Image 1 (cartoon, one colour):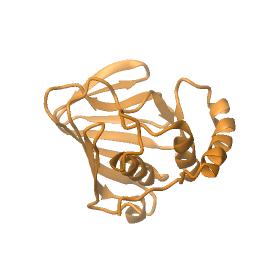
Image 2 (cartoon, rainbow, N blue to C red):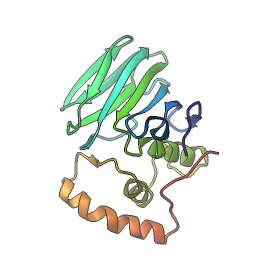
Image 3 (tube, rainbow, N blue to C red):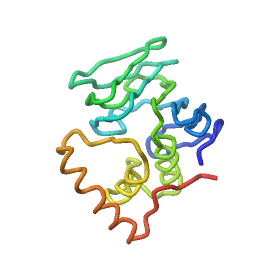
Length: 183
């Protein structure tokens, strides 16, 4: 289980997270972590939407780029980016020359701490591609384990809702797990 103070690094993306509050700490109301990114010209995650929770980025240092409702934007230190539930977006990435530091949070939690711990642990163990991405079957198993309703913006959501349990079942049969811990 993720825990406050836990530090995880993704060697492929140059990202580091430090959990500040986990789902267990807040009774499910919030997950928050410091998110540090090296300069990068492209985002880590594709365009997506969370239907059942808000995502927030409080910029502590550096300059963040992000896309909200199809519009590319920028935010600097002292600014906060709020992505309401149901809004298509691309998470903040560091397109500037300096390290980007953010406080990244989700309300309610819905397993996002487990999601990030699992993704970073797989990357740290060399179980991702060179961009730090897991394969589709592994992603389906992870997504099927948590309550976050996060969907790729390029595929109709009803299709994803039908495909997710099938892909997760195949993934489990191939030995993928929904949770991997660095501890």
